[in-house]
Image (cartoon, rainbow, N blue to C red):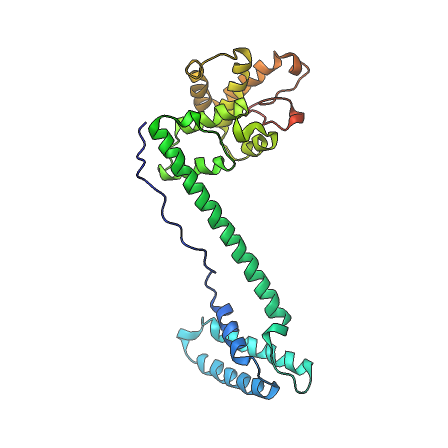
Length: 269
């Protein structure tokens, strides 16, 4: 199938802090309150209460989030200064609640930034694989960490269509422990991220290549058809073939090797 290499994923926007009117209202109060003493805060609190009573008379302000949040924040600051004693002034830097919120905000921002970096990497890798598919050289590509998510991205771009060539490439890589999949942990992770037909294909290829190591990819095309149409049957067949191997004659039936080496169990096995 020809693939249009000019198609690209939408440009990713920088991560933004989710809109939160209540949080915005609290921050406005904290900025205003900085440096105020207890008397100034008490006056501001009274003004906020007056505003709240006035707002309560208007139905269109019943769901106003910043107003109640601002009032609650003035009350918190007033209590904080009362506990601090005479002469105390408000300092957000010394407010444990504020500092905890700032730490939580920083952690959330770091997560959003990490997610953006990963999405950008996945999109770039998907672009690269698209070009290789168009050139007919996908089979030469070395699988890399995160290619399971890249497969999902390619499927999304194609409107949900499953790309048989991509799945076949991944199945062969899993079966032959190629590139990234040389590590047992990577194969185990793939088992939880890839769909059953692809895993069944890889499991069946594993056993077929053990039987006929010199088999050309075209000779094993039937394995993909069987795994796609009957993944459970393909998994059962791979388990059956595994029983014929001396090292699994005692009952082991896993995809790509013994269970103790962290390989993936075939669907239906």
